[in-house]
Picture 1 (cartoon, rainbow over the protein chains, first blue to last red):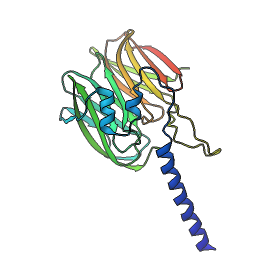
Picture 2 (cartoon, chains in turn brown, orange):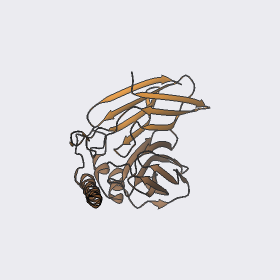
Picture 3 (cartoon, rainbow over the protein chains, first blue to last red):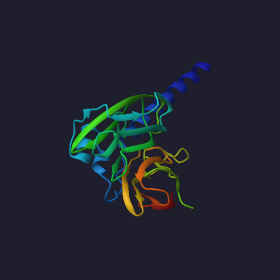
Picture 4 (cartoon, one colour):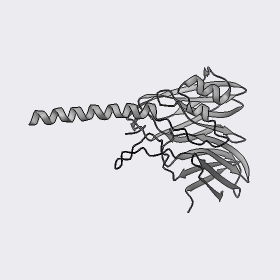
Length: 156
Length: 101
């Protein structure tokens, strides 16, 4: 009786893990997109592809002039506070990317007279680098910070 | 009742705009536990912050932004200026809110 119960629990846990994998892989929503929303950049699963779709350039160079503020350990991957600031002259766009997420591009902010600073809260599926990419003068610069995620925030 | 809450603090010629938006930011990957059906995606795609009707920040968000998004930006302006935040979602919903710094 006791051992049967163990087996059943194990079985159902394994089944739900499989369900999660399928849910994450197959069910990318293809909803009607707003005109200005760069759908392709946000739909693609590749890091370089999303940068290329968004900025028309890829292969950002590492820069110390970008500050990525995020916690060392995030207990809840559904709410990870991230602040990105760029000290590079002429920064007109900042994007946040997380390579391990189902779609890497999280958000991007285009600045029109505002300071190249943004702070928000993002979802992360697992422990990963939060990458801040700044677009300045047609070139891309990046900085990253690793965040350890205890509980993933991509679904359940 | 607007879904957008704003707090603006002026420092010299910069307005620090902190905003909380009430929105579920559904990813389209979650299942409704009661019915087993997928909850359709419903998330904010574009968000603009304007000062005195002039756009200062144009943001694109995705499902990877947490629900009830918190947005903090620093826009040019001084006390008395009008700050407007507008969002549009993937299912065509929209909301806007204007507050005076």
